[in-house]
Image (tube, rainbow, N blue to C red):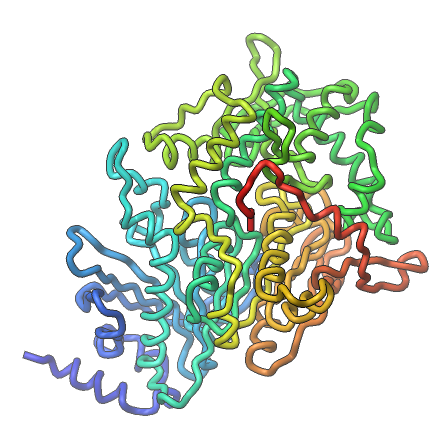
Length: 579
């Protein structure tokens, strides 16, 4: 028997929802009536799974990709399953703005590391712009489980449904379900435009590209520091360990920090403005030699903390000494990028003002020496995704240049269609009018900034092969723009270059571009920390580069071929194109 509450909810859904209040629509009965039960073939939405709650005057703190805001919202969680699969359940979480705040917008969000979502931490960034905002658990069992937690059904056996959900399926399904649910919930007519967007960084950036390269689900996407070119990217995290092993030198963290600080100080003024920010890492590569750091004195007090990106926690003693030739050799070899035993270039690397996240060393208090371990995301990739073993036991002893290259090739072949995420032909998305704002910190220590430059250049060369470089760049910039963020680290401002800007309102800029055709020639950014907090910047669209003149009084975006060339890596270790 159909309940009277359900009948009333259906009737309410047929009314003009904008005249309703949050209390009117944020009920289990109303939400169940709005579920898009037939929107995807092969998927069954479980109406009994719906959980609904209303929150009023919610104050969200500022994030790197959105400012602080106060709003009302309706939180909805629901589950769906894929027909024919046993024990299959995918959870979706949506925050819906109050009816009078809804702006005909929908936003998908993504994750980071090996996670497909960021919990609810990214959801305010959409609701504050009047968008229904969603996250998926990918079918992994909860919003707290990562893909590598469920990737193996058993040692030697891949859970392919989990793999493909992580690769691209889950986000497509969420977008299709989320958009129709939004239409139903707010009683939108077929002729009313619903603008659909995406925003995420790192792994979430890769997830964004997994959709842009396949579908036209979104009108616009903000993709930050994407961890695509997956096989190369994950093994890249082991290159710093490889360098230290090859050179038989494991520098104290303080020594590398001193090299970094000297690099920042030397390269800071090359952009025409001395402000503690390296805006032109390309000029740094052209004009600064790290050998100048040899013999400089360093000191760091004892502290507890991470020994590197994805590495274990440890306690480091006080460190003092002078920068050694071996320490500089380690730094220079890391920046020079991965090579095989024949000296051929296997992959690109970080810019010279990036912190040495992958080169973290740990102190052995018994021997009084520093050492490195092949742990973290690179080791996890080899153990789980290549060896198919649920373990974190990769040994430094097995690392060789050719082994790293072989691991890249193996992962490239095995996961090319699902995780590599570098398809350069974006005709489907572009043909539907989609826009892209791609941002990447110029001092990223986890995903090399040159990785994003290489992909943008691949799209340009594939989609505009008959145009000159400048003409092809202009054509691509009409709908896909890449902005490098001076001084920024991985998906956030850098703690080493605190006066650097960050584009906190990128989604707002994208909305203006999509909905009002306001093209962002430069991208506004703001200093979010440090002594210059609040200072406004404008970021240059690639391939233009920033330059200050007249002692920092005049700013312009210039075309500098010599600088551009430093971003173009000849990966001559491969016969296949590396997009």
